[in-house]
Length: 343
Length: 248
Image (tube, rainbow over all chains, first blue to last red):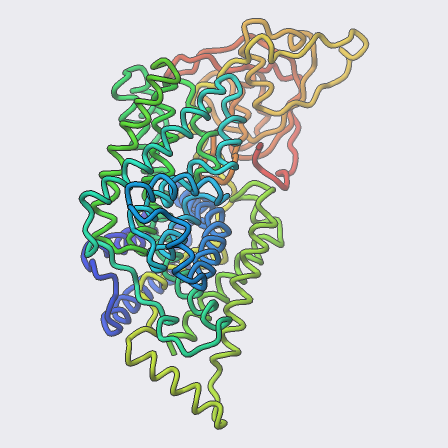
């Protein structure tokens, strides 16, 4: 496993440097460190090829490449929509959303149903909305609901649970509830200075609209894409390290099962369009714990936390993720109790 | 300078994604339906990087003076730099082009195996007409595994079945024929294994074989004790690895 060590080391960097390379000088230096690590990796590839043919390393590489590849089209879509949002006049959103945050949150949450993508698409779009002057609470409700309640995900859930049609209903209801509750919590307790949106080149103005679109999209992509890779490194590492036997050992205990599947949803970072099939395959677990898995996964996972710290800043992500996690587990348990009879 | 780095990263990544998705290499990572999305995304990245290069190419004409002024303007605001995290985009490029990790196999089966759900009575197919009983029936590993575990496996007990998968060792008693199922990408991989009662004929773990055989009652997992589907092998034939290694 030694060749994968360099990316793990870099995974700690956001904690060490929470400003995420705000200044050009240190940014270049961090980039240099990274390039040295990559160069070491490449050197090791030629000096010690055996390391790279170990089964665990190869499985890590496959899962890592898979996470990056399957998220990429959705990230590109999200970045393009976000760049398009940046060209929409701010007055449009003022008219489309209710003035009061209490009302805007559920409207924005329900609007999440129209973005047919996974969580990688919704983060840049939500960032674009905040920049366009949409109340953060409403943008965050959209961020949380979009990956969980869009038609693609709902259909995938119905297909994955053919004998339990209420599973999709429970997932939809619980996910929308999470989005609205967290949005309201933000409206009540959130502080604007926790959000730090990265500056964009296009803000300097004086360029054609086409050029502005390209600059915004490129800048957002290389930024969010880097954080996606960071999340992919963490998720692939845990995906390969945690054997399935550990999971099945706790499936029989109702409380542990819920906690373990909630943690697993965070760790595995499976795309919200595929997680229903994984939940369906966890046959030794209760329906309640599998619903928790489906509600937590699209709103909190390693890949998403990395993307959020890239888009909204680490100070935001470190507060937002734990609150969302607790609310998501609570809403899922409530929905399971009402709709699935606590099975 | 920094803009050029951004364009370079986009061209590298877009080119790699196009390379992986236009060959069959992408099948080791994502399900086949993803190809158009990957081609579109790769082309979009490549195009945006290339267009960026053309727009930002160094110029010395009077127009170029204007362009360099624009860049200085960016520099004043410290907007043009590349965040350190963007350099990480080199990592998937390096993994895909240099390591090119193969599809998941024996390692994943051995670590991630889990009990298989038995088919419910209504999922077991109707009885096969007598004249077809002589035919060999090709089945997916999941289909066979679920039916083989059903309380009443129905027509399976009288059919001859053909399965394809790779070899995984299993304690002292028999060996596994395994296949990995993915729904979206290799991160949601779920292995499906069938115990083969019969000689492995010296085939190494990870090699692909076709097993033709008949149903046999489920066996207990060597350490965890849950029931595992079994096939009694009539023939074991090595085959080349399929283009799409996963079931989906």
